Length: 108
Image (tube, rainbow, N blue to C red; front, side, top):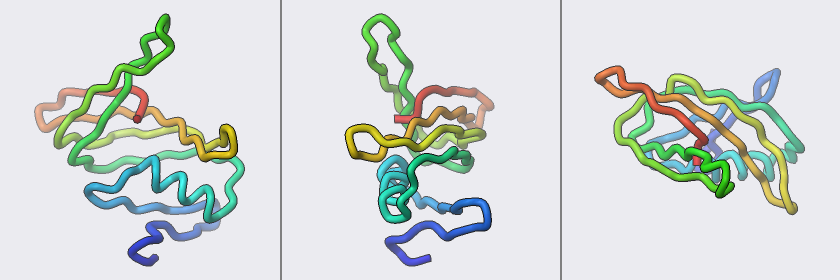
């Protein structure tokens, strides 16, 4: 795994390790392009220095974002697909704070 390439192949897919400050959606998009991935399921967990979730305002059909500091992602699930020739990760996650407050939503 090189500085630029933050993933390695496994028998069932890929293992990606992100570092503080990495753009998760951009890294997933790069993986999709580099490895010619037409679609996939994603799961993950780990510490996030800063995380932003979106809450879907259904009638407006847009996500309202909110950011959090020093939360641990306890579950991340989603899919990788393409839209208009570009990678489109679609992720949802739950994260918890040191006071055991849980938050979650669309990962944006």
